[in-house]
Amino acid sequence: MFIQWSDELAIGNVLIDTQHRMLMMLCRKLDIAIKMQQSEQTIQRIMLEVKKFAEFHFVSEQNLMHEIGYPDVQDHSKLHLALLVELQVEFSKIRHRTEFPEDLLYYLHQWLSDHIKGEDAKIAEFLRKCPARPIGDGLYGEYRLA
Ligand SMILES: [Fe+2]
Ligand SMILES: [Fe+2]
Image 1 (cartoon, rainbow, N blue to C red):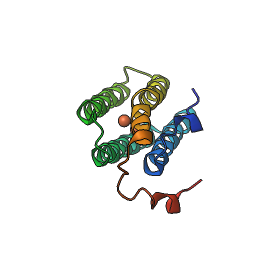
Image 2: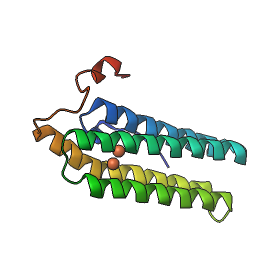
Image 3: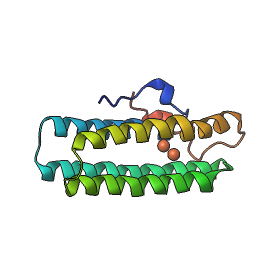
Image 4: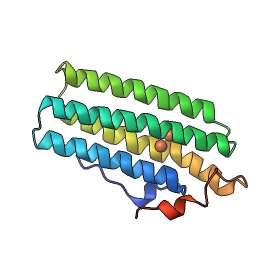
């Protein structure tokens, strides 16, 4: 499984795009840890890192939607919540050894790319037509990493 950022996933907001890249990077970190057969404790620590960053990212994305008056903010936020619940279920499967970590990577890959291409892309489209700009929009470019 190869989890990778590609520019077609960009939604046109530096804050969100940077976070999506970071989320991809953390998933790859998890992938590497599993392939290197790191200890269960190490893998669990990285799973926590992924989960905490995903929670943080969802708050940022929900704030962006509020700032631009995005109409489907409630439904999109429910999807985020459902994804976090699912992630928790997947992590507990690993903890209880009912699933191999490789299955988790497949799940994470699907989870991220489907959500970004399907749902986050709708925010991007709204953002392109919307006269309201997110708070600090002009500022983020100064902190662009790549
Ligand atoms: Fe989202
Ligand atoms: Fe997102």
